[in-house]
Image 1 (cartoon, protein in one colour):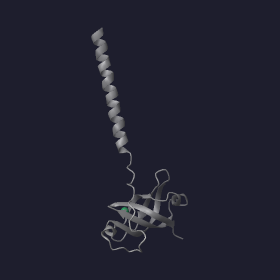
Image 2 (cartoon, helix red, strand yellow; image 1 turned 30 degrees about the vertical axis):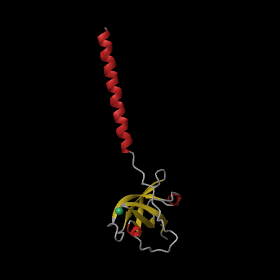
Image 3 (cartoon, protein in one colour; image 1 turned 90 degrees about the horizontal axis):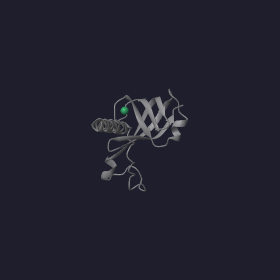
Image 4 (cartoon, protein in one colour; image 1 turned 180 degrees about the vertical axis):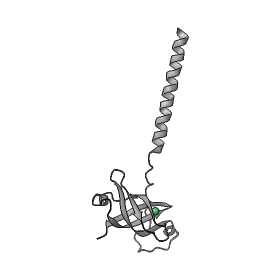
Length: 131
Ligand SMILES: [Cu+2]
């Protein structure tokens, strides 16, 4: 009888260990938030700046059509035109710096946006409906 109990105990331990692994894996799937943006240290000087830092943070203008809005995440999916020197036309999701700007947008809106590219991580710093 005692041995049977031990086996059961063993089994339940295995199961709970299993569950833990599953939930850990799930957590890893959570979309990583974009790393905090590194503000240019010389923000007082007029743009463009010609310090080496200027090459790491790129600002680009883009145009596109809203295909999805995620207010909770603060992200927007756009079917965007070519963004010069950044990327070809495509449909993709961007994080938006000012979530409030998303509240006035809806799917299908044509938008102008400003993209900040920071070490390969893009973030929309301004997005406005085109009239
Ligand atoms: Cu893109």
